[in-house]
Length: 211
Ligand SMILES: NC(=O)c1ccc[n+]([C@@H]2O[C@H](COP(=O)([O-])OP(=O)(O)OC[C@H]3O[C@@H](n4cnc5c(N)ncnc54)[C@H](O)[C@@H]3O)[C@@H](O)[C@H]2O)c1
Image (cartoon, rainbow, N blue to C red; front, side, top):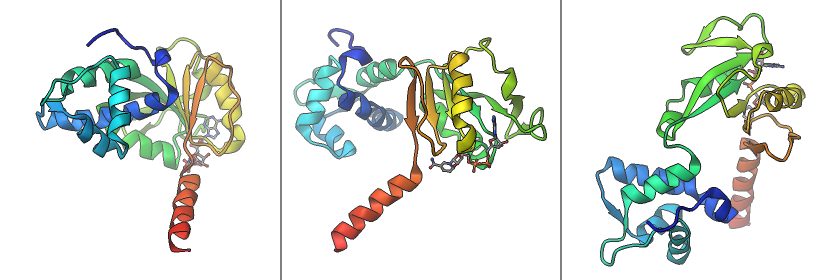
C-alpha cells in the first residue's frame, strides 16, 4: 500500500464501484483465496481490465507480477474508505411491509451495516416487538443517539417530514425507499432506491433487444 486514499480523492465512478469490489473480495476471502488479478476483478464487476487497474491504482495498491493484488489488503482499504470496518449503525424508519422485510434481512451485517433501531408513528406498533426490534416512537428520535445513517421506508407523503426530522437529529446519510425526491442540506447524502424504475430499464433493454 502507498498513500492512504480517502473517499474525497476518488472519482465518483470509482467510489460507486467500491461496494461491488468489496462484495467480491469478501467472497474471495471467505474462500481463503489470497490474491486476485485485475482480470478477475474486471470479470466479477463486468467492466474492463484497464478500468479495474485504474481503480485499484487510485486505491494506492499495486499488484505483484504473476500473483495480482492481496485480497486482504485491498479489501481492508476499500472497507476503510466505505467506513465498514467496524459496523455502521442504521436507524430504520417505517415498520411496515418493507421495513419488516429489511429488519429480517441478515445480509447487512456482512457489509458492515447494522439496523440498530426501528421507529414508526403508529401507536399500534410503538412498543411492540417485530423481528426482534422494539419499535420506537419516531417522535422520540432526538439528537441523543449514535446513528449516522437512516433508511426511510414510510409512505411518500410523509417522507420529507421524516427526512427533516432525521436531518435535525444529525443523520448524515439516508437510504430512501419512498417515491419522493427528498430535499436535504448539502452535508447530508441521499440514495434513493426505485425498484420500478430498475424494472422499467430492464424492460426497455429487453424491448430494445427484441425490437
Ligand atoms: N423503492 C422501492 O422500490 C419500493 C418498494 C416497495 C415499497 N416502497 C416504498 O416504501 C415505503 C414503505 O412501503 P410499505 O409497503 O412498507 O408501506 P407500509 O404502509 O406497509 O408501511 C409504512 C410504515 O410507515 C409508517 N409511518 C407512516 N407515517 C409515518 C411517520 N410519519 N413516521 C414514522 N412512520 C410512519 C406506518 O405506520 C407503517 O408502519 C412506501 O413509500 C413505498 O412506496 C418502495
